[in-house]
Length: 569
Image 1 (cartoon, rainbow, N blue to C red):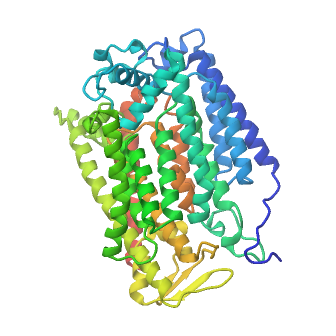
Image 2 (cartoon, rainbow, N blue to C red):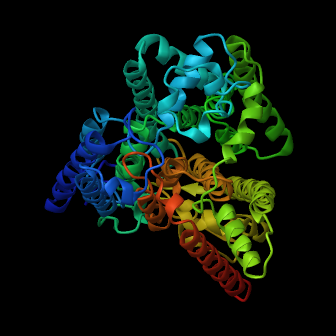
Image 3 (cartoon, helix red, strand yellow):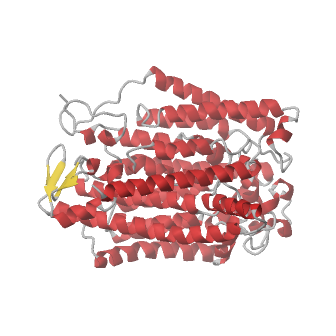
């Protein structure tokens, strides 16, 4: 029998895991070959379609390598979605898969050329928030997708500074692309450094991870390594990470690294003014790379509250974190000399219309229905505006439910909660149980084991590690709320690109008990972009919009039925 609290050695690497490692490596190599044959090269033809690519001399080989490579990479990642054999094994495998893509041409998107031109624009004394790269005279204009040639930069001043640095270091186009890829990989490395510590601070208990039973004599929460090995695997080995964040050098990698670093500081040092200021500054830097990171900030405030969940404590700790965030915004805007002009550039992020954005898909379907009766509703802008209003409501609801659960857990912890070597249990009043039960999304994700809240007894299945049972639960609630906020942002935004699915991936890997619901759409997104950046959503507009709308209706019906069953319990 293993003593409570003792570390359990990782199981030996199975034949299936070894097979997944080398199948994924072969997939990455094939994707790199597809990149050299027909990737997003500077001189690649723009506006291609699958048919036009197939008719080129290297077209059949390009598409075959892309399809087989993507299937292998996705399949290998999917097969170990409940956790790699060990954290170290997950790191090594993710690194192996990244190597071929690190030396491949840009894949899946031409955005890196837009970054290069925006950096060139700023480096040559032109404001990229008021002038498009075409008017600025970027010498690499022909490499930029036409839709982005006349639009201002939609990114914050930190990334514009990084892009200008890449131009200065790289000199020419090739050197600039290499420098931008190094910057993206640095963001991923920062995220990789933060994941194990975040898993220890707030990871899903091992026994609540589907497919990973607790060992005899060991509490479910004490099976070592499961949260970290799963989080590292899902967050770093995914096909979207290799193709779009490494080969594509998307700035989302930098945003994610800063975001996870800020959250790590706040969960490791809650309630400490200096730590909250630092965490706020890191989150502010993430926002000044990509503004979508701002939805995490309210949940970071909750994670930074050490004990009492009162309005006074919320305002006090929130002020420190917000102060750090505002300082980062002000300093970077002043240092860049660009002020807050970047905020206006955000309005152009929706210039692209594709059915992969659910609101856009619904707008398309309304337009198609109108055309059947001789009308032209022009519904896409309206549906997108409604979706943004809905997003605000969803974010507020997620934050409020997290707040209620945290207050309930705090009161349960203060009501004679007793921690033994294998778990915590305590008795709280019915009102405390109601607060904890108020958030089924969080309960079902492992915050409260199996959602057991009855007769005023709050029973928590998570273990009491050295950081303390209540703190682990509180951190997990806040981080899971942040993950769901990012999910809502991705789903309800006017535009969806495949790499957007990487935003909530790491936090969901850390906090969600079940993985299929978010791993499956992430895997599907890996098939949306061809090596040269051609988005298949562009050539499947009508069927894709109909399918997306049907999926949304099915999910809505299922959600309503589930809510009705819960009310009748």
